[in-house]
Amino acid sequence: MSRLDTWKHITLAAFIGLGALVRGQEVAAQTQESLIVAGGCFWCVESDFESVKGVSEVISGYTGGTTANPTYKQVGRGGTGHYEAVEILFDPAIVSRQSLLDLFLRSVDPTDAGGQFCDRGESYRTAIFVSDTGEKSLAERAVAKAEAQLGQDIVTPVLDAKPFYRAEEYHQDYYKGEGLVLTRFGPLSQSKAYKRYRAACGRDARVAQLWGSDAPFVAGH
Image (cartoon, rainbow, N blue to C red):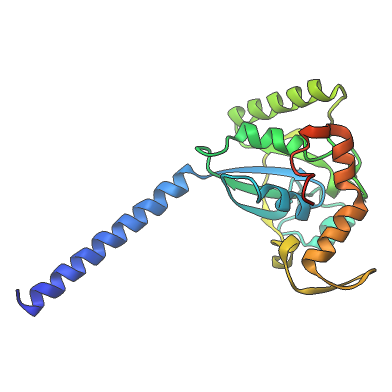
């Protein structure tokens, strides 16, 4: 075989390999779905759901409001209509949307219309965002199931999806960051500051009080 023929075979093999890789990525993209929920502090919801098998990524952001490309300060001040929210990217062959909805409602206080735990105000309210009638039906079913189990009125609304805006990069994976931040406890790494905040805010204590052994993310925090 000539050197030219050898290079032709190598080039052909490379193109075949590249084509297979692209097709694999396309298949993965087709099987990946998205769920957007608001559950108070998006650091906490991101931390919870990135531990779920079948979830590939959780993105912190803002949705539900009228201001385009809002900043954290704008949302926190109020008036934009936005919620702190997360986009959960998942493989439905591994974990179903219904399962994620059930986990979500049991990881928050869905009886609180004024915020979540120590975080008060419109941006910290809970909500489930849906894109079509099928998603709406699943969400309403999850709410009804949780309400029956809890024996209390659930105020978490099921809302039509609006544009989701990715939050500033320093919010992404905040719960496991090692950058130093200044806190009332002194300089701490982001991960340690997050754990202090979560405990001080009473999130896990309230969720455990509401849901008991059905609270999915309380242990280990």
